[in-house]
Length: 457
Ligand SMILES: Nc1ncnc2c1ncn2[C@@H]1O[C@H](COP(=O)(O)OP(=O)(O)OP(=O)(O)O)[C@@H](O)[C@H]1O
Ligand SMILES: [Mg+2]
Image 1 (cartoon, protein in one colour):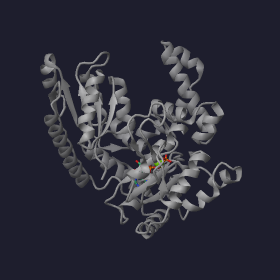
Image 2 (cartoon, helix red, strand yellow):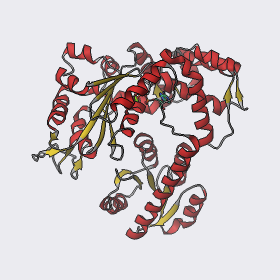
Image 3 (cartoon, helix red, strand yellow):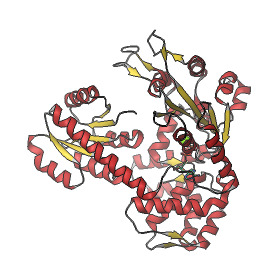
Image 4 (cartoon, helix red, strand yellow):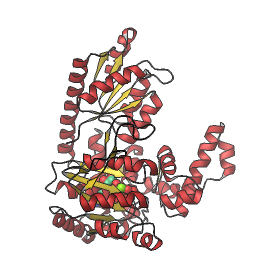
């Protein structure tokens, strides 16, 4: 099992380094952030299991960061780091939901015990949450296409065969990959995920195979790659169509021989991994163009699994809606909310281009907006039209509505990106090429603006 991942937030580098040393020595994975905004960004992108947070920082102080983290991730444990002068603030922070506070300079024993207890408590709470709400990673649906997917998963999970999962965005490809892992003999081993579209080209080899100390400028300590981390477990290669030919060659070798080398290293390493890959790109066409290796394709496409679009199993919509509504209200301590028959009928007639993810966001958004226990067709009708309007907002409106240059630039950029993504059928690679930016940058901007296929939040 992989060890918990801890985010250290402190504007003093020396404090970060000494904490990092203590924690890494104990086997934790550590990430650092030098200020509030980057802490929030890191939490959003990397999902740490626990945060160590300095209270006094320039710009955004710890309390503000705590509030923001607590708002977005109510169950993320935060431990406050306080200097001599700030104990009373630290106490205040525990009242605001921090798990505990530690005085600086941090004492090794105390840190390790506090961190361990906080993580244990969180795990316990998480278990109780899943028991109360049912498994949130369960694949819901009783339609023929979904039943067929479930049947195939059950059949292939116990084997070691590579699986290639296809399907539009938001159809549950990741969910399926996790289900295969859970039902396999490797279930107690790690499930390690690599999003090939989110990692810059020059870093992907490091990510997959790790690197030796000082192997290139900026390479610090030796780092294990995802192949090693997935040993005796499952490696999920998401967006596999976004790998360069060079990386594809290395991945192929790792799959064929089970062996690989760290970047900058000469030792040959072995890992026993089961590969599940996913993509919504047309790999066959890419093979024709010469941008995807045919031998790699055959290697991973041993079992093809296609996730149906929501349009193909729209009859499951009522079940999905009540599943998402129940999970959402229960985990937020709200009283139950139901969607009326006419609301469901209206929803069944939507195109749901972002598929189940789109539907889930929609359900949660309306539960937040709704004042009562019932959501009717008239409650949601306006929103179904609204999404289209937001996307066609023009420059003249923006001129009238925005005041600062920054706001104007950001609004314009966001609209531009949505338009271009639409034009290119939400294919990140193609869109990035069309607008002349690296796809890692496009991906980052999309995350920054909260842009996803189902519209913007
Ligand atoms: N059949 C389903 N039952 C329950 N939840 C589902 C189902 N399909 C998708 N979801 C939910 O929809 C969301 C999107 O699913 P997931 O991330 O697996 O999609 P994806 O195909 O990997 O999307 P992308 O191509 O954008 O990466 C998740 O919250 C997932 O739990
Ligand atoms: Mg996915």
